[in-house]
Length: 629
Image (cartoon, rainbow, N blue to C red; front, side, top):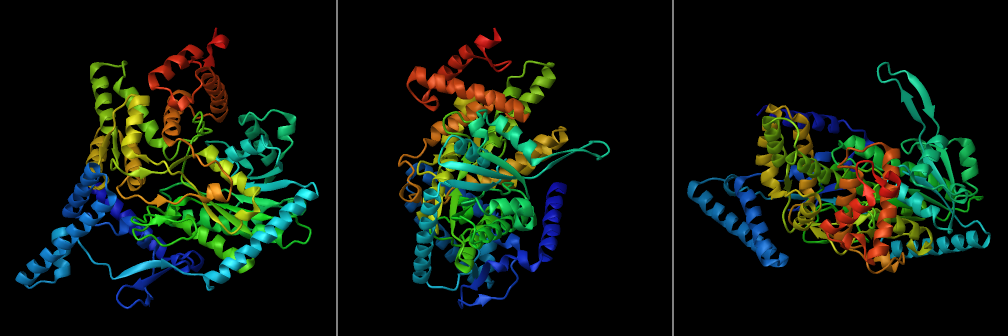
């Protein structure tokens, strides 16, 4: 009970903070509340938490059981349309039963319905505010912007300038892959990376010991990307800046140089913390986007600038929990079932700002929207990333190690085994479809957009049409990691199992494990429930010219598991330089393996892959056996 009270108090305190947000950060800048009865816009205050699914879920036992029944029906019939119709029928029967009972008791039908079955009627809905122009005028306007972009792109090519772009977020997961691919493509003549100086302080006193300059950080980054050839390194320049500052925090001197050479800006910097509060997410994702747009607008309006277009990197989950509707590429509609977290919400707001900036200021922009990004498709390399999908795989991997622990006395081993089994639960519906996309496909799409002026004015999903189900992922984890993970109903797990589990773990002195499981349940439960949105794809091929066959998601996820197990040792290897050393050895091993077997590494069965790996590498030192001997 103390835990629940603490969480409720934290939620109340956060609500009080959100009420005092400055006008520039208010959700009402983007969203309006509309009466379902009259169709009028309501003048009610809109707080950030009102826009999250957790604020509207009904945790009534009957509602939970209905959800479980529908999940089982989906598992049996595999007919989503039929299941949705059945759900409507069940809810209608519940409402009619409540009305009859209310009439007998002389009570309010709405209150009886909510008390007995968890059913409640909404009297309003949310929608995004529309830009004040007709669709015809917007379409004609965008066509003019495409034509402008083509003319400027051709001019830069004819004058020998080529493609030269500034990149924000270059030290991030996606950003590093962009750098690596750009280094190996002659179409990209110069890459300027915005990077903050890094302060090194004494851990005890906090005293500043030294500052690592952007140039020093950049050179170290190129080393970790194995970019050793002088002609590759010559492409890159690193300038000091900060996306949360006006004009990206770029000095007058650097700006003077950039305005005469940059043809594009790629804004890739963002916060991918799914559990950040609204204000922090807004600052990183919306304010950062506005600063980048303003910077690009300054280049475009400069007569001396060869600027062609601005690329904004968003997420396909700007569409939130749409359910029933296809998440289309050409529009953002406020999701009927709200957003999972503030990351999704603020990225949607950033996308709206980007589109409005184009229509209002005339900035030529393209939006690229990746799904859930995982490691590189061929080898699973992820530059040391341990977030998103990597996190649960690492938890399950460490649980597997605990289950096979040989050290310590019988009591210690038994305790470790019990804790490991408690950790091997994942909140998810077996049929939930999860849209995973390898980072190399994402970077390829972003760079392709630089070469296609026709992408201006478009919103393009970098997602897949071969999505994985929760049950497929856990079957792969069992094959590759060796641990059997149990699926739990997300709602039941979140509201019943998880609170009990974390309480028990706290009493056993395992608060850290309890916190990790709570975080996984809170973050991933929303993405593995039944009825996830289906993201439309097609412009990646039609507009960007990418291959029609998108990456094999099952093989890519299998390589993610293998990479996390052997290269990262389930997150225990954290040093950037050591990760880089291991990933290069791993990459070369994968290339040799595919050459020998004439197949992709992800298609090789787990046991055979392990045997070949052990023949090639000493896993203790992670060195090729020819070197180790």
